[in-house]
Image (cartoon, rainbow, N blue to C red; front, side):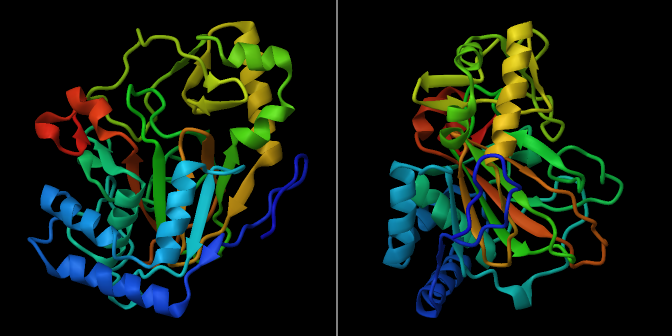
Length: 334
């Protein structure tokens, strides 16, 4: 698999694993069976429960890859699996409305939910995409310059919802359609490659609570951090393998040393980043604790065949957010 070394231009990256036709067929059959049962509501507890059971019947190669990644996400904090079913013949036009989500059972939604259950438990935020468990990542007319999932300009490096008391542990994307010109790239950079490029002074500053991270533009204001948000470090945990909470657009350094360290961290991410140019059926799992991601620019046509990813958040420990989830559901209301 091609990799990027520090100081070089990021390259495209192929899948860590591509399912063989027999395994892909088994995934397709399980996804269709999941869609055929129940009331067809992706956000219902019954759907998630059935997806959790169906996960156990997925091909062993897929389950092994996810289980190993769940235990340790490796040097890049990213897993790419190709060849998953998306039911291309049945796909409607790529959505073009703001806040688009997937509420009804489909093969891609079934694949995402099953993998989410293999990693932990699916999670959503009421203030983002109306609390849907499966969300569309598509370009929206008039929002080309929007710095979020509805835009098509470059998207800077970030971890998902780092401002929140309970950010997701993993983010899972499934590509339903590539962009017309095949230039859109998901950019990923992990702390395990970036950390050795940081000076001791920058590491010390990044571990200090000298940063404020506010909600991104795509996040509503319900339950969002206000102007009195508590300062937090960008890096936390083990000095040799820390967690990250950072979004270049909305993380503000509070001191001069914090600003210098954040800039150096950004350069380290650029130097070690990889670019994933996805094809339909490619699934990407990002360890949101140790990896930032972003996107290159692309040009949508709004002709019904634009780039279309679907996304699901995952928590490894649903209980830790119990006070934020009414009725012990999967949606954080605040």
